[in-house]
Amino acid sequence: MALRRRRNKVCTPYDEVTRIVFAAGEQSKNLTVLGQVYDELARAGLTRSDLILTLGGGVPGDLGGFAAATFLRGIDFIQVPTSLLAQIDSSVGGKVAIDLPSGKNLAGSFYQPKAVFIDPDLLKTLPLRFLHDGLAEAIKYGCIRDAGLFAQIAAVKSDQELLEQADIIIETCCNIKARIVEKDEFDTGERMLLNFGHTIGHAIEKCCGFTTYTHGEGVGIGMVQLTRQTEKLARMSPDQLVRELHVHYTGGEGVVPALQTNLALSRRFGDDAIWVPEGDFHFELMLDL
Image (tube, rainbow, N blue to C red; front, top):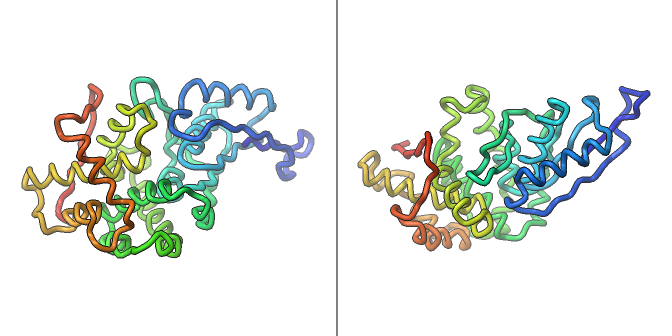
């Protein structure tokens, strides 16, 4: 969504809106759709006094944010995330990108939105698969920084209970990410903690054509596989918190039942079957907290 000011009244509110809509899903986060967005912005006559408002899940935020970062060498944008994953993770921190045929998020930028407006009530409109998809990222935050958050999520017994606790879960996750990004905006050090599960997760998404598994499902598989590998390397003992991730992802009491499917998903991608693009990359290991 592109918003324009009146040409002769720079300080007036935005009063012209151009809606730009594209198909939902990761398969739209590509150069072709980005080019179509550029064309729409140009036809709308946007200037640097205007802004882009991204409304939707992670894909509109990533693609719309990258369009804002690059159109006219940068115009303002605001994020209005509507999925749990976008509300707790992708809308916060300033990473914007599109996918290339060679891999996920390979063309992008660090470009901070002017604001992020989060309404947890929007989560009630989501299909359950995408509510659970975002929960994987919340579990990630519990693993890397907040044992209390991990325990809170593990105790959730229903989707209704999850929605009732959404406000505090979102706030906790956003605060964790904000503290990390403030210290390492450009992802050269501490911010890499936020990539837990993502190296394998991104490879799974790409291998399946960005259609079979959602981002959160890929990250969930990645976290389980990396936790197993960490135990094999004897970098942590099986009775520590991250070992509990196995229990809760594979059917432990108290977790949202749909998350149990991650065990079956992870079994389809054994250690020998996971492909990672050539080049420099990082595998994340989970240590005792």
